[in-house]
Length: 505
Image (tube, rainbow, N blue to C red):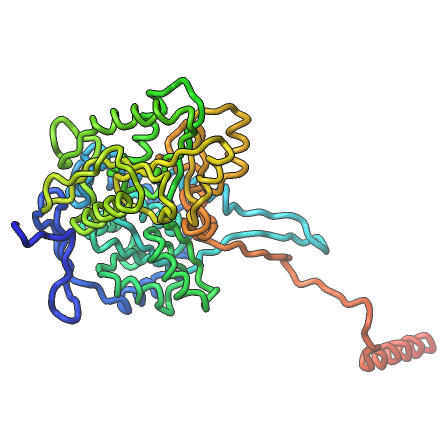
């Protein structure tokens, strides 16, 4: 490849763009190519399919989603290999992702019943009142590349169960996985117009978000893209918008005798998935009393991390980042931190400039006057040394993001204080910042989200509550504030005269 370093994906050089090509990040081999979709035509089909899909019995929609899980099960090895090839993550991790795709169905069925269940109660005049939930209509799902099957599926399954139709635009960096995912739905019997794939780049994503026939946008990705979507829809409050935009997540270490365990939690938090998780730890905040012991053990463990191609034997802990552009930016970020007061604990290295493999990087940024509040989406962990717990909480909150935070060590009282004061949608104790449960809400605040958490709470934004009061026959009267009706008065007089006439007879 030489000087012509390849990217993760390439848009064709013709104008307008008509094709997207995806490459394997670990090898540079071409993996997939496909035509860019027609946004208007795809949305129109989804709109036409919605009335029938929404009016189907809930049990039917659930059954089709269960069949989807079975289709994924039948193709799980093929699916995992495709994810590993297109994303660059280790095969063991890709298999875990496929398992979460299958498991999402049962979790979503339970969540829908709990979060959007029907209610009936008595109302006036011996009638009833009811609360039911309706689907929004046509939902746009915009997926990321780091979990190209699991994260969009976390929107798609709840949306379909609720009765929405879906247009799914996968990341232009992982279109092959997106195509495979949608194929499983179609093979399961979900009508082709109910769940559709839109292949495209940023322009197609913008057109989909702004389309007048889209009723909701469910987005997972960068803060920059999420903010742009939020601005684009600011004048249209009728569209539901759920944003999950990553984080600059802190992991705080207080006094603990479990140095090895603490270091393992830190490494898991920072370097799993090559740091390409929105919940990955970006900042390690350590009190003075623990600094030397913790940093020595974290560096020792990070030095032992194996990073390699997805199918290597023995299996690596992590693979590459998504493409050369991402690797270039991370290396530049590491050098920026170094040149602005950061002190390298473990240098980030790139063994091959033509491939996006990076070793884990550790850098102490305590002395930096202004630490950039950005999400460095890769295996780069910044370390900040603080004098005490109060300073640690202040440092943890020194961010515009608010997705995940974890406390290592300390007492139950310390954790209560941490939980109450740290700003994050996920707050853990002696657990990693990542690896959130699908049985709990998943989301954050600030630049991390707009208070519409996904996972178990996805049911909340896939349907809206409708209040009703109901009787089997009309029944009403007005008891005050009406003038006497003349026709009724004349009729009453006539009735009286007829009665008198009858008596005389």
